[in-house]
Amino acid sequence: MKHRAVLLLSLGHAVTDINQGALPALLPFLIAEYGLSYAAAAFVVFAANSASTVVQPLFGHLADRVGKPWLLPASVFVASVGVALVGVVSSYAWVLAAAIVSGIGVAAYHPEGARRVHSVAGDEKGMAMSVFGIGGTVGFAVGPALITAAVLHWGLGGSVVVMVPACLTVCLLLQRASWVARSGRSAQPSEDPVGSARAKDAWGPFVRLTGLVIGRATIFYSLNTFIPLYVLRVLRGSAAAGATALTLFALAGVLGNLLGGKVADRMGHRSVAVAGFCLLVPLIPVALWVPNQVAAMIVLMAIGACLASTYSPVIILGQQYLPNHIGLSSGVTLGIAVAIGGVTTPILGRIADLYSLWHALAVLAILPVLSVGLALTLPPPARR
Image 1 (tube, rainbow, N blue to C red):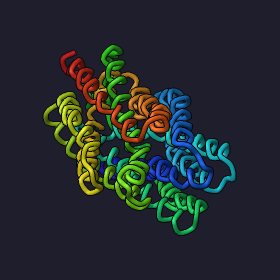
Image 2 (image 1 turned 60 degrees about the vertical axis):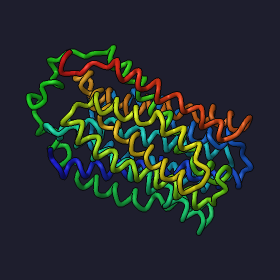
Image 3 (image 1 turned 90 degrees about the vertical axis):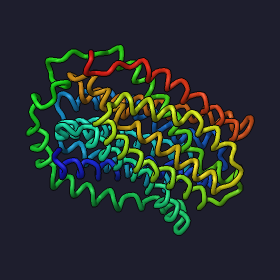
C-alpha cells in the first residue's frame, strides 16, 4: 500500500464529507430562520443527495475512462461552496439550490477517489479503503461541531467557515495532483488477480450488494439527519448537545471503520459485512428505548461503530464483483446507493410530522434484519 497517496486521498475525503456532516447540523438553525416543518427541513438533505444520485453514474463512468487528478480538488471546492452558500442565501429556494451544488461536488469526489485508492492499495485493499473511509467519517464528525460553533457565534452566515479547510486542501491536492496520478499508474493489474481486466463482472451479486448499501445508507442518513432534532425535541437537550451526539456518532465510526477493514483483510469482506449488520439488529431498538441523553449517546456510538465496520467490506466487494468497472462500482457503492438511502429522509420527516420523531426512527429497526438477509446471499468473490 502506498501510504502517502492513501492518506492524501483520505484527507480530501475528510474535507469533502465535512460538508455532508455540516448540512444536517444546519437544519435546526434553518427551521428557526425560515419556520420549516420537519419534512421541509429534511428536504434540504434530500436535495443534496438527489443531485448526487443524478450525476453519480456520469462521474463513475468518467473515472473508469478518463479519470483526471484535477477532478479531486475541483470536487472538494464545489462541495464546500454549496454548504457555505446555504447560510448566506436569503430564501428557502436558494438553500435548496446551494445544497444541490454541494451534492454535485460530493458526488464527483467519491468514485475518482475510491478508484485511485484501489489502484495504490496493493494487497491491503480493506485497510486502504478503511483509511479512505475514516477520512469521510472524520469529516462527518468535524462538520457538525465546526458548523454549529460557527453559526452560534456568527449566525447562519458562519457557514462560510467550511471554505477554510476546503481552500487549504484544494491547494495541497493541486500541488500533489501529478504525484497521485503517478502513484495510481504504478499499481500493476497483475497485483490484483481478482480485479484483473480478464475477470468477469458478476452483476447479480453486485445488484444485491447495492440493495445492502441502500439499507445501510438509509440507516446512516436517517440517524445523521435526525439525531440533532431527536436530542433537542425528544430527549430535551440543547442544540449543542445534538451536535455533540452527532459528532460522537461519527467519531465512533472511525474505530469501527478501521477495525472492519483490518479484520476484513484477514477473515473476508463478506463475513465482516454480515457480522456488522447482525450487531445492528438489537442496537437500534435499544437506542430508542433508553430514556436519557448519556445512555442514548453511548448506544449511538455503538451503532456508528457497527455501521462503519461494514464500510470498506461492501466497497471492496463491489469492486471485486465488477473488476472491469472499478470506478462505476465505486460510484454506485459510494454514491448512487448512498444517495438513494438519503432520499428516504423526507419520508421519515413526514412520519415525524404526522406522529413523532420517535416513531419515524422506529421504522429503521426493520432495516438491519433485511440487510442481514441480503448479506447472506452474497457469494465470496474468490469462489465465483
